[in-house]
Structures are given as C-alpha cells and as structure tokens.
Amino acid sequence: MSSSATTTSPLFTATRRRVDLTPDENNNHNHINIVNNNTSDSQETDHDIHDNHHHPYLIISSIKGIFRLLRKDVGRKIMYVLLLMAVVSMFVKVAFWYYYDNNGHLELLNINVNAVIGKKSRRENGLLILKTIRDDWEFAQRAISDSTDHPTRFSVINRVLDKLSTSEIWKKLDTENYHQCISRPPNWKRPLKNSNGYILVHANGGLNQMRTGICDMVAIAKIMNATLVLPSLDHESFWSDPSEFKDIFDWRHFMKVLKEDVEIVEYLPPHYGAKEPFVKAPVSWSKASYYRNELVPLLKTYKVMKFTHTDSRIANNDLAGSIQKLRCRANYEALRYSPDIEDLGKILINRLRKNGKPYIALHLRYEKDMLAFTGCSHNLTAFEDKELRLMRYNVQHWKEKEIDSKERRLEGGCPMTPREAAVFLKAMGYPSSTNVYIVAGKIYGKNSLAAFKENYPNVFTHSTLATEEELEPFMPYQNRLAALDYIVALQSDVFVYTYDGNMAKAVQGHRMFEGFRKTINPDRLNFVRLIDQLDEGALSWDEFSLKVKHLHAKRLGAPHIRKVGESPRLEEYFYANPLPGCICNRTQENIGRWKVEQRQSMYSASQR
Image (cartoon, rainbow, N blue to C red; front, side):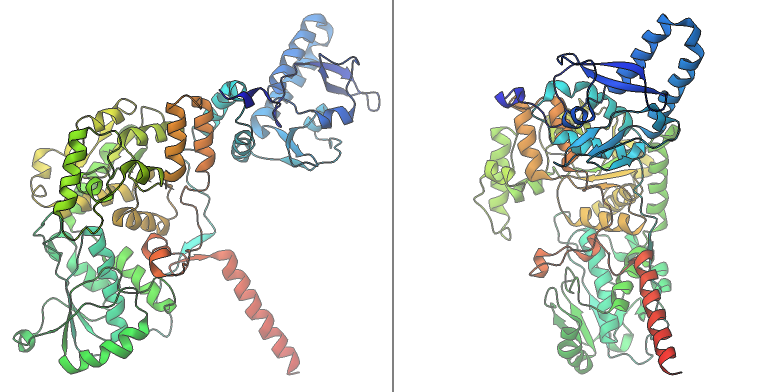
C-alpha cells in the first residue's frame, strides 16, 4: 500500500463518532446528533457537521443507539420501536440523504427524524438530494472511486455495494425513450421495372463481414437502380467454408422483405449468362454520389457488373435517411438465418436459461489467427509465442510482421486473455455461478481456458451445449457455427466482447437496435494497467474492483450518437451503432413536431 493511504480522505475520516438521540428544543421532536469522541463539546454545531465528512455506517450506528435507549427506558419502548421501524423503512426504501458542500464533495447529511416523518430537514450550503437505491449505488460508486487511497476503509462498503449491485448487473438499461424507426417514408419509390442492369456480388471475409457487406450492397443497388442477384459467399477466407447464401440465410425471406425496396433475383437471366460482367472493386467508404456518377454509367453500358468486394464500400454517414433505414431493414429484418440454424440457436438459449438463470455471452477473441495477427502472446509459453510469430510471417497479406507483444498489450491493442476476462467479470460483480457462453473459435494456449474456468466453472460453447446429432449438419461449416454463436450472443442477458472485430461490432449494433441490451465494452488500455497493479500488490481487490466498475459505468451499451471521425476509418461503424438513422429519440421527435406546429401557427397568424 502506498504512503498516501494514510492521508485524510475527502469522503471518509478515521474519527470515530457516537450517536445520541436528544430532544430538539425548537420542536420537541427527537433529533439524532453525531458527536465526535475527540471533541470537547458534547454537541457539534451545524458548521462542524458541514465541515466534517460523515461515515456511511452512521445509519447502523443510529440504530444501535436506539437499541441502547430501549434497554434504559421500558416506558418509552413502543415509541422507539415505531421510530426504529421508520428509520429502517427510510433506509431500505430511500437509502441515504446526500448533499454537496461548496467544494463539491459528497456528504452524508445530519439525519433529522423530522425528515423521516415527512418534514423538511434544515440544510445549509448544499443541495439535498433524495435518490432511489439504483441512483444511490451509482452515486456512491463515483464518490468512493475518488477516494481509493483508503482501501482498508472500503471493505464493508464494497460488500454493501455488491449486494446492491446484484440486480444491477443483469438489469436492462433505461431506454424507453428510444424506438426503432426504419419504416419506409411516404414518398418511397418502389423498384423500377426497367433497372439499369444487374449486380453480381461476391461477399468477402468472415460471416459478419459478409453480412454487413451484403446489407450495403442492397443499399447500393437502390442508389444505382440496379437488380441485385443473390450474393455469393467467400470460400477462400481463413476457414475456407464452402457454404452458400442459401445454406446460411433464409433467402426467400430475404427477397420477400426487400421486394418493396430493391429487385432481387435468384439467378442472372439466361440471356445474360454468357455475357462477361464488368468486374469492379468499389472504392471503400464511398458516398452515394460515387455510385450514381461513376458506376451507374458503367452499369448502363455493360448491363452486368460484378463487385469483388463488399466490406465497407459505403460511407457510415452523410447518406440519405431513407438509405440508412434500408441498410437496417436489410440487416435486422431481411437477413434471417436459415430455419435449421435459427431453431438450434433457440434450443441452445433455452438450455442456457434453464431454471430461469441469466447468462453472459463472452466474445473471447483468443484464437490462434487473431493472436498471430495482433502479435499478442501475454501469458503464453515461449513455444506458443514462436508458433504465432511463424504463422504471422507465413501469411503474406498481413503487412505487420515485427510486433512488440508487451508494448502492444499496454497500448490496449491485445485481446483479453481468458484469465483477464475472468478477473474482469469478477470485478464487475458477476458471481462465479454465472453461466458463460464462449462466442469464439478454439481458444489458443495449453492452459488458457483453464484459467478462466477456475473463476467461472459454468462455461459453455455450441459444442458442449448441443448434442453430436444436433451439431453434425453444422460441423464442417464454420460460418454456420458462427451463425449459431451470433444468435446466442444477440439474445444473451449480457454481451461482453474482449476485442473489437466484425462480430463484436455486428452484435453490438444489433443489440442496440433491439432495445439497447446490456453490452459491455472493456476499456483494455486502462484495464491491463489496473490488473498489472493488482498482480503486483499495488492495489487491493476492493480497490481494483471499484476502479473497474467506475471505469466501465458508461460502457454498458447505453444510447449515444454515432461518433463521426476525421476519416471513415476513424469513426464509429454504422452497424456497430445505428443511432442516428435507425433508432429515434421520442423526446427529440416531440420537440421537432412542436417546432413545426409553432412555425405553422405563426405563419397562420401572419396571414390573418
């Protein structure tokens, strides 16, 4: 422990206090006075109370003081029992009364029984705030995190907060003011019978990269007034999965949902079958003007155009609202997985939720290819580090070869190790009995997953939840297994992703669209520093846990406007956060309508 631990906390002091119940001279009601044992006067003035910082345990001390009085005076037992019930009721239902002093510090206000029975409590130099238990917990978290140089004083507080936060860790975010808004506008134009030509699409990358790319191709087909042929999928990526569009997605549903938006055909018409298509890789992050001005003339000339890449071929922002909504209709309504995948996904979810238990879906990106690509080998053996390095050098299209693993990790550029992920969940308050579904391929490292199971033994994957007979049709096809994981992750009570990637972004955005389901995005940059301090003994567990909770209080998937960057690569991905575009705020809509009505009213008045 650092030497700073002995300094006086701005929130708590080491001064012990006793609690006396004495009559109030002004109104003859009982008043709880907090008295310093180290002061010469028997009572503190209001000024003293404002200058000293009171301990949260005073509520408990107050109750103990009342019990001592009960032992002394039998005749007044009834009155004090009633008073005790009122105090306890106030504590349970309302929690604490707080106020801010002039320095901005959080204070526990001197408790007046009159306030408990409904009269206003006198206050000076501060704002009295009555908060619910939910707000109290968040409030106390912030206040305590400012005083973490006093770890020995937090053990009891942390246990109290853990109890209060048990329901909070699973509780849905309060987002009732937001709603989905992807309906077609009144002036929406149906696809023309005579389009400018046909677009063949070769979706590239893994499942989720192909998924979002296909949605962009739907939007591009609308912009170009083109007929879209059912996409073909990538068979040459890392998994070399031979699955086609119809094997993974419900293709009839896809075409039916989008029939009012874009003309989609199953195959290229026979009279175009022998025609050589014009092959083009669209420019990444392009605006609609690029497709209208540069590619539409080519499509009209060649009639058949083949796009060799679909990933990130259209901008995140600065598109018409109708196009943004179309992208979301394609992703969240049209692209449904095939019935056999959807059905097995529901079975796995029901098994995870057996007996009403919630579950976490943990996207643990600790696979061999990811570690080789990022150059991360923390906690791995020398042999494993060498194996990853060799793989990195053998993959030609990976440009970065020389990577300092330690430096990359401290920069927040590495996926969490299984052990780090377990410590993170524990620090966030999730009990060891939690069901955890691992959303990932094979975890790399001889003892990597064992380190996670030491803290969370109830670990499941699609391989352990499903029977061999159930998985048999899917086993040779990694993209179909990835689709299963997507379904389970989407419906989880909490989704945690330990590294940014296409699946993390796709699931995160989909969960936002479905009502901002709790999604935790660990701050890897700061977390690795904290866990290193914990391992070195510089932080106690209570300190560490409080810091982690405080660090992630605003990283739980709550609504926020999509961030725009200096370049498309530096801004927030559209499918990771479809707000604005596909999610609307009722308050803002009401304000907008009110402004329109006001303008109309003013215009009408001016015409009289």
